[in-house]
Length: 467
Image 1 (cartoon, rainbow, N blue to C red):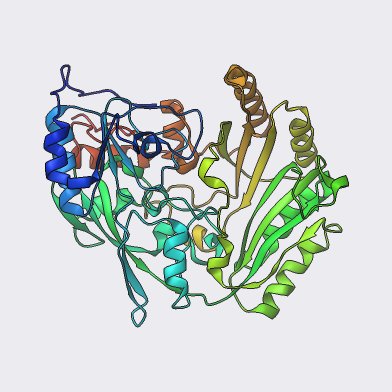
Image 2 (tube, rainbow, N blue to C red):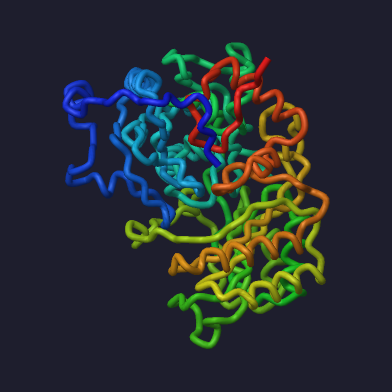
């Protein structure tokens, strides 16, 4: 959903040669050899053609691009890692502000803090911090940009031990719609600091983050593949809920793909492809993982002691992989045996090339932060569920979207919320579900203060409050 409010009726034409003189070799336009690659984002089915892509070098460059968008009226897209499910990382006929060249990392091991630029991916920053035995929790994919995942909250492998990514955020450098470079923290622009911790890209372009770092030289974790039955799925959730807070994980309930390390007879069977991380010492980690191994004889057990950066393996062959999927994110209160059986039945009924129900038990450190402390308002949510149907033929889109919607409706419980980072191109009602109650009104007020004309509208949009 893109709000078009306050877009100029007749945008001013921009001069590509003039931009090239200002930004040197960091301007990409139609006809350039690398244009198609530069406009391609992670997810398939998104085929937008921006007027220009500008790879900024610093906050001053960002301010110049923001001013350009404001003066011309062209739609502005902000790209960190390009993983926006809704395709917000690229604009049709607009300007793409590409942060991918901004990868500076300044680590202070003594104070356990770091200033980092937002063009970094989660994998890149995790590797840099890991050299010092330190970590910040991001998501479950190394190629995701830290800009987007942080602004939306950040649910990942350390969520129960150290909370969301934003719970480690101490300060940020943000360029607002007026082109001003602002330092924001609890004391300086505290309203803006509150809003960027979960409110997404509605309020400006974050160019640098200051993170509190956590000592984490080693973990115990990796992949565990189990047969998926009503008992093992319900058991996986129960064990995840009762596990120590050091353990966070994801259970992907799905049909086993033909992975080389799986026996041929397992291919096509229902499995739980689990990714588990115990943020602590080896002996305690093995004890915490034992109940998961005991749910059933594993088809594959790759759980082991490792350094934390190893949880993001190289994404081999990912360069040309652009999945197309119908998907929906939601929170639920519980998954018992009957619901687990329903999940398996729904997955088997799908005609998608791959259908998945991804289950994440939350709680722990994330839940101890007050609901109104940040713009992420789902501190009390118990389980996150992401339903997805991957497909290849565009004409199948409606079929798979209907399957996803029916599945979600059948699973819906008392928690009506949604995680903004996993929202697709959806309705305003769904965006409001990400910001329930007074959170929406408070965000709209901050939006009116820092972006009254809704310049930053290519996102899960919050319109500025009207007095």
